[in-house]
Length: 280
Image (cartoon, rainbow, N blue to C red; front, side, top):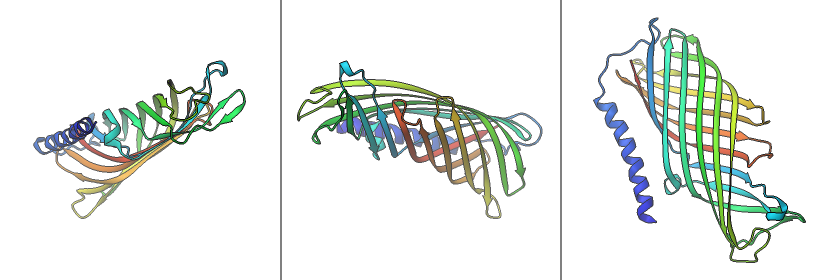
């Protein structure tokens, strides 16, 4: 167990180290993204959501057992991260830009507890000394069209609209050391959910200092879907501009609420992100 945790940690450090090394060896002239020509940017990034909270509800027919409600609350990402991959890209001509974002996260054995189990006779509490393991896989794909509403040599503000798709697959395994109850002594359940939401928001940056190499990037969106779910996402932090592009560190937060009618009642993911943007 310790060796697998160490291996995951080493993998993440190696990925971040490779990103930083790529930043150091990259060589390109400064690119004016607003000169009227088509320009492109690619941003590999690593998001470590140390703040993970979720309320899950696995619906099971009464004749097959009770339906457990699970509370997930974990803050140790490296011990639970199985795999992660993320990449963003942008195509821009003057004030118009088209931006894509792709993220996949696989988290296992998250710290969780059963709040209660609903069955034919109502709610039943499980023994406190029960063992519950929760796994979560998330795929995020987002595409927006963006327009620069304000820009000068110190700041820029874009407004955008687009679509965000999120697919989440979650599974639950338990092994009770107390009374059997509705769920049985041990077992497992799994379910998945897909969200497609329209989103609107703002993004941009504010330059700092006389040379304007340092800057503050910011982002905020809000959206809703046809399944009565709502979502919002935000980040802010600090960045430094090189000739080849930007290196930024931000805190990113993503929230979903389904109104309690699906396997995921609500989902919170928050944590630091390090990203390198290359332009040409």
